[in-house]
Amino acid sequence: MKRSYASLLLCTMVLLASCGKSAPLPAFDVPEERVEGADATVLPERIIVIGPHLTECVFALGAGGRVVGVDTFSDYPPATRDLPKVGAYIDADLETITILEPDLLIVAGKPGHIMEFAALRSIPVLSIHMDSLATINEGLVQLGEALGCPEHGEALRAEIQSELNAVRELIAGQLRPKVLIVTGRPQHNLNTIFTVGGKSFVSELIQAAGGDNIYQDAPEAYFEASKEDLVIKAPEVIVEFHAGEQLSEKKQARFIADWDRLPSLPAVQNKRIHLVTESHTLRPGPRVKELVWHFTRLLHP
Image 1 (cartoon, rainbow, N blue to C red):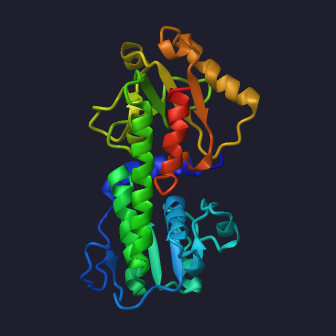
Image 2 (image 1 turned 135 degrees about the vertical axis):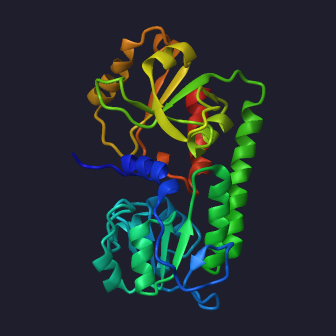
């Protein structure tokens, strides 16, 4: 079965906190930028980015012209599609990375195999973790500083905040539906339903868009929910992600029909089940300012 970036992203988000220790990198005292093994006085000119959301960030900051390679799933902006591909987060093509001779690797978290590889070859690494609105903003600012365009990082952060404020003002005083966020499940099966808690940026966007995540208070960011618990929590809207999947109308109808197995859910009774297929909808990055409006339209038509 072909792996989608959405499924890899979900796995990666769960695993990031448990990444193994990596070999020590050359000392570089710029903790706020998290660049390891670099000369702070020299701007990178040959950048490799591993993570579609990070690729979007680098291009949004105006540094796309310095990118010489990206991961397999990077497809936005369109200019990324012609760049050399270096595998993905969990199976990076280290040989291709070596051939491209980068002077900076930008990665999510600190994947052990990539960090050890970079240490052995003295390749500087910028480690960025984005999985909340706060860390998205922080990451954009850090990237801007590391790439020599701090004003662009601050501008993107301000744009995101401005859009969030505009949405909150628009929906002020409106009823907030209870929302189930589904980040993954098999077709014809409600026995395995992956969802998110309040620590995820997806939940934060749903909250900002005027909904209440039924698992807002869950301690985990990503986890599996049971059908029995869904019946108790009774979501009024279901937002189900199939990011990057090409679903025909017939297949979308089948995914929605699966929920008829839980007829007591208000979302099922009122036909408020939405499939979200756009590839960037599970990517934390600059386009969250568009996503929050998309979710607002779903929750408050």
